[in-house]
Image 1: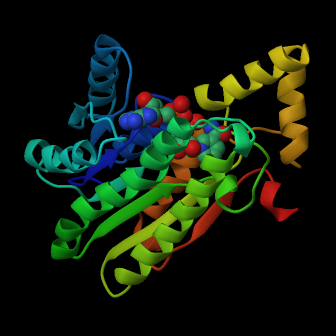
Image 2: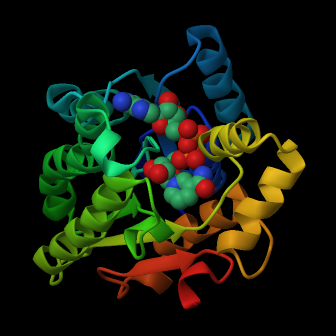
Length: 260
Ligand code: NAD
């Protein structure tokens, strides 16, 4: 379905981003990977993806906390892979502390990566999408883009803001073939969430299994994690013609979390 399309997926060296990169590559899109990690492992990841799906795969090490690097990610993808048709803003960070103890530098870093980077990449990619009258922008927000939890001031604020940014871009592109939507996942068992489970287990002196059960029972009526593959399948759907009139949606995939 996405043959001849080029995708940029931020934060795609791990977790949900890697799953989405795989999903788009499986549909025939060339993919520019981005994110932190061991250089040799990332090279292997790219080579494996390319071999498995027969698509071109690049890697750009942009640190998305830096506006110039976020813009450079789009510029270099255009140079190397020819264009950017699909932009998935996925890179994200978490930090947990009560607001009055929240370190200022953590607040600034989370705002830069979770929110401002989405603005910078969209700003850089949109002109070429508009000029071809086709594009798909998918912002990975969160259930925390719709509802709040304690001790996550920066995460909740930035994810709500990403949902707002999504709506503005959707309206500004409403008469074009470019769409912009947000995905709002509940708990997905990636390194980002595993760290919270491990911290919880250590803090409350309970087993990791018990911490996992508490995490799920607190938020997910389904008592099950969302899988990376389920998020990737939704991203692929949002790239399809069937989703051409989904504009500015914040789509929940959260085990019932925000239905409560
Ligand atoms: P993860 O920690 O497994 O992956 C995060 C990715 O972002 C990694 O590739 C990392 O290298 C990259 N990254 C972090 N900071 C970066 C920076 N400054 N520049 C470039 N890359 C950077 O996390 P994940 O759970 O896969 O999360 C992916 C997205 O999904 C995030 O936006 C997160 O907020 C969102 N999300 C996750 C969950 C969940 O339960 N895991 C739920 C809702 C939303």
